[in-house]
Amino acid sequence: MLVSKPKNTFKEKIAAGQNPIGTICSLLSENVVEALGYTGIDYVVIDNEHSPVEAETTLSMVRAAEHGNLTPLARVREISRPAVLKLLDIGAQGLIVPNVKTVDEVKQLVSWSKYNPIGNRGFSGSRKDGWGFMLEMSVRETMDFFNDQVLLIPQCETTEALAAIEEIVAVEGVDGIFVGPYDLSIAMGIPGEFDNPEFVAAVDRITKACKNAGKFTMIYTGSVRSAIDYFRAGFDTVAYSMDAAFLINGCRDATAAIREAVK
Image 1 (tube, rainbow, N blue to C red):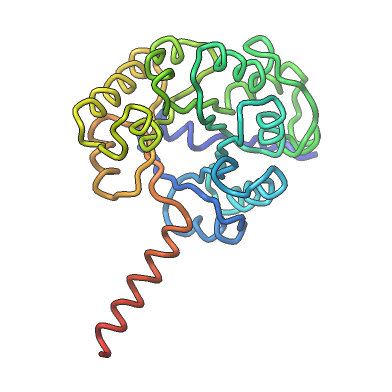
Image 2: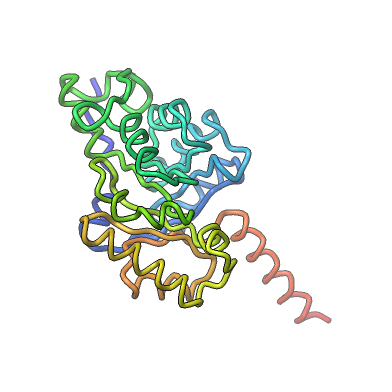
């Protein structure tokens, strides 16, 4: 019988103050995810919101992440019980949830994603635990293990979530907050103005609320300079760029350099 426990190395690195770096994957390719395992990043966010990726493809991408020693996180397609359960049961070790607006939504997400006594997640043997054959633990021990190892990360990307951020991070079962800078700035009426004092103050409010509640903070950026700045500003982790951008930028820059050298 297999007894290896799928430890969440992303969580361990956060706890150790190691500032893990990840990226977003939306190209429906397990080969891309596996290749990213050779880059030095720590985790991938498999995007079920802004891409055609669904649960079946996510499963293959999760498996590739595990093969590449990357922590597989996933962004859900919507706030619903099936969207949450399917990604957890195939082995996602953390869920990022978009378009959160209310504390009640967050409490409902906790109910779906965490087992009793924290929530009311449905129990079933699935890929996450080798269909019940991976862990030599009782049902209670299995529930406690996954409650500890699986992360729930609501996004703060709406003005409603921003206004309630202190209450949201206080909810038991919330492990951290993912700041969606583009949608948050758009919602604030300052699209893409990440240096705007209003946006800077909003980000400061989020990071302060998380720190006070003992929850971690993460944010997306497409800029190396911004990633460095966000870490220096106190973010625990940064999701930098996305698989498609790496492909386009790398090919474009190499092509331009070759053409410039031979013209």
